[in-house]
Every structure is written in structure tokens, then in C-alpha cells.
Image 1 (cartoon, protein in one colour):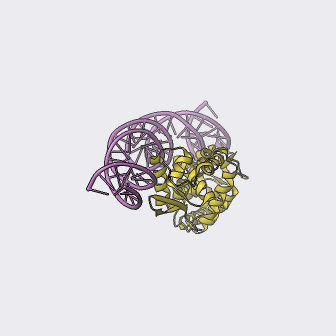
Image 2 (cartoon, rainbow over the protein chains, first blue to last red):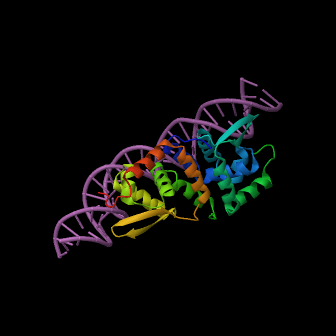
Image 3 (cartoon, rainbow over the protein chains, first blue to last red):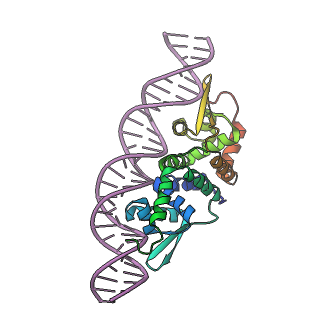
Length: 116
Length: 116
DNA sequence: TGACTATATGCGCATAAGCGAATATGATCC
DNA sequence: GGATCATATTCGCTTATGCGCATATAGTCA
């Protein structure tokens, strides 16, 4: 558990999770571990610009980190960041048809090298 | 655990918790059970209009409910709403000096009938 | 180096959110 | 009923947020 010195910081964490696209991204990363941007663009069926900006938001707020591998940049959820919240999102996601659809779409098309 | 049919609903829950004043209100209600609006106004040292508006926001999103008792309206956290999140807020609040200050201010002045 | 792919970011716009001040509602008490 | 107290809501304003589009950056491969 991160220690939040003021309510502002804790609120910022919730705000980071308060956007549907960011939530879907976090859920996919929680369930599948590590994904590159183009996997997310294809799975979420959103523009590259939207996905990239939300990833930047998550990154700036410490929820995800990334590593480059050649042309691709892989994102993952930052560990020891806010596990109880992540457990909650996992449970909510399991009962969430939209997030399950995302998972299915990812599994159907994901993992193939070369996204475009 | 509430079942969220889409990521929008889950995001709305986080958005409700993404505002510092609303978080402070929720924390106080979690720790002290039931408070009237004027207790909150005094404790948070904010205008009545701001507090009332945030309470309405929390109420419309199902996180709190209220009951009238004479002139006063008492708010409490809605049970069986999102307990794991509430546990998380309680833990975060215990390490949060601002929220602890709120608790102390409430305990120092609260409970007295007649707020103005 | 140049073409190509993957990703990030700047800009302008539309909408949402939060605030202060004022006003409305609703209960109590005389 | 009229005055008063507690609370809710409306209005106008300012700022924040998210998006599409275009462009920038960075790695790869020929």
C-alpha cells in the first residue's frame, strides 16, 4: 500500500482509474501481464492517439511502466503499487461483459508479431 | 460487490471517489458512521454549498444515503456497496495526515446539537 | 540515407466539473 | 403566518479533460 500524504494524491489515483478506456487498459494488463501499444489499439478498437495518451496518463501516475523491445513498447502494471485496488478491478472485470469482450478479442488476435 | 455491466459504470464509481473533498467526506462517514451536513461543513472547513453539492454527487452515485431528523439531515455510507474499496480508503486514510486532521477536528467539535 | 512502422505529442475544440454567490426549499418555533 | 435555521439548488464563470487531426520521434531494414 502506497502512503498518501494528502487526499489529493489518493484522489489522483482514483481519477486515474475513473476513465473507461484507462480501466479497460488496466484490466487487460492485469489479466495478460504485458502488452504492446498496438495490441491495445487493436483490442480496444480505438485510435492509436487515444490509446497512447491514456497510457501516458497511467504512466505519469505510476500505475504502469513500459520497456522498449525493438520497435514495440510493452506496458505492464506497476507492482507494489495498489494491489487491493487491482484485486477489486479484477473482480469487477470478471463480471463486466465489455471487459470480457476485450479479453476475448485480445486472445483471438494478440501475440502476433507485427500489428499494422 | 456490485456487478458493473460496463466499464463506464465502474469508471463512474472511481470518478465519484476521485475528488479530494468527496474522499474526505467518505472517510469521515466510514470512520464515524453518520454525520449531518453541518458537522461536515465545520470539520472540512468548506462552504455549505460545496459540501452539499459533493454530498449530492455521492448520493446520486449510490455511495451514501441520508435521513432527515428534524432540521438536520444525516448522511451515512451505503452498505453492501463497495466494501473492498472502502477498506482501501480506510487504510489509506489511516496514513493520511489530512484525513487524520479531519477526524481530530470532527471529534473536537462534533456531536453538538446545533451547528451554526 | 531513405522508406516504413510503432509510438508520442502539440494544437484547437467541445464538453464536463467545480466553485462562489445568491436564492429556494423545508422544518421548527414563536 | 412570519422569523429562523439547516440544507439544496440555480446561475455564471473558470478550468480541466478527452478527442481528432496532424506532426514529431525513434527504431528497423534495405
